[in-house]
Length: 568
Image (cartoon, rainbow, N blue to C red; front, top):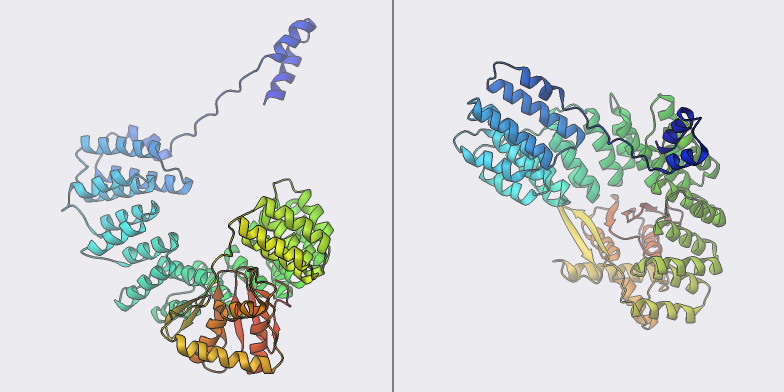
C-alpha cells in the first residue's frame, strides 16, 4: 500500500519543488484501518423485525452459531453478542422457551463460554430435554473438557446416539483413544443405534492406535446396522485399514465406495505409500488427476512419500515442481521432508543438502536427521559427522541424533569416537526415549516395555523368547549391539537388546496368534537395526509373517525379507 501512495503523490504533485516533494515522501502515511466484516445477515435483518416471538430468537441464535462455527470465530466478542441477544429474549418474554434456551446453550458452547453455557443450563432445571444436555456436552467437548463432559453424560436421565457420539468424539479429541473405543463398544452393547459421527470417530481412534480388531469391530457394526458406506465413513474406513496394516482391505473398501472425495483418495494414496507400495500409489495419483480432482497438500505428501519409498527420483522432482506451478500448493515442511528422503535414499545426499539450504522457510531439524540417516546408509562418514554435530547443536536433548552419529562412527569402526558420543550424551543428561510395543489379542490390548516383567504371562513369554533365540542362533543370527550407547560390556549389550519391547510382543504373538495369521505390532519409536534383523530372521526360520508399524512406516516381514528393503 505504501509504494502505491508514494506513486500517487508523484502523479498528483508534479509541480512541487523537489525539497518540498522529498519532505512529503518522507512522511509516514498510515494506511486506513481494515474494515470490520459486516455482521451476519440474520443479525442485520433482526432489528427490522417488528413482531418477535420465541421462533425469531431460536432461528437467530442458530444462524449465529452456524456462522461462528464455520468461521471458527468464537471468543469474548461473540459471547458478548450472545449476551445481547439473550437480554433481548428476556425483554421479549421468550427466554423461558425450551427451544430458545437450547439455542442459547448451543451458542455459548460454540463461543467457548462454558460459564455462560452452564448458567443457562442450571437456571431452569425443569426446562431441559435431551437436546439441552447434548448442547452442554458438545460445549464441554469443544472446550477440551472431556472428563467434565463424561461426568455430565453419566448424570443424563436420557441419552440418545448424539450423546454417545459426542463423548466418543471428546475422548478422541483429547487423545484418550482407548477410552473412546471402550465408550463406542459400550454404546453398541447397550443397543444404541450408532450414527455416522460415532462410527467415523471410532474408526479414527482405531486407526491412530493401529489396532485392527477394534477397527474390524466398528466395520462389523456398520454392516450389521445396514449403514450405507458414505463418503465420510468410507474415507475413515480406508484410513483405518491402511494404518492397521491391512492395505489390501483398505483398497477393497476404496474400490467399493460408490462415491469418493479427496479425503478418501488421500487416505488410499498415503496408505499405499506408507506400506512401501510406491508404484501403486503413483498410479493411483495419476488416476486421481485423470478424474479431474484437485490435489491438496496431503495428496502431495502421499505421492512424494511414495516416490521416496520406490526410488522414483524423476517422478518425485516432477510432482514437487507441479505443486506450486500447476496446482498452487506451496511446499510445506512435510513436502521438503519427502524430497530430502527421496534424494537421500537415491544417494544424492549433496543435492538434498542444497535443497534444505535453499528452502524459503527455516528447515526443521528432522530434515537434517533424514540427511544423517542417508549418510549412514551410504557410508558417508565425514559428511555424516558434520551433519550429526550440527544436529546435536540444534537439538541437544534429542537422543536419536546421538544414536545415529554413534552408529556412523561404529560402522566406520571408530570406537574412540563412539565412546566420545556416549560421554557427550551422558554429560548432557540425555537418555533414549522409553520404547513400547502394542499388540492385540483376544479382544485385549497388551503393552510391552523394554525388559517388561509385569505381564500376567511373563514366564511363558520369556520361555518362548528363549526358544526363539536358540533357533535363530542355530540359523546363524548374531546380535548387532552397535545401537546400544551405554558404556557396558558386549555381553550386557546383547542382553539389553534381547529384551526390547517388540521381541517380547513377538514372543507373545507366538503364544496367542494362530499359525498362518500375521503377528501385528505397533511401536511408538522407530525399530532398531538389530530388532529389524531379528524379526526378519524369525519370519524365515519359523515361516511366520510379522507386520510392524513403527514411528515412521510399516514393515511387512515375510520369508526373511522386509517391505522397507532395509532402509527406514
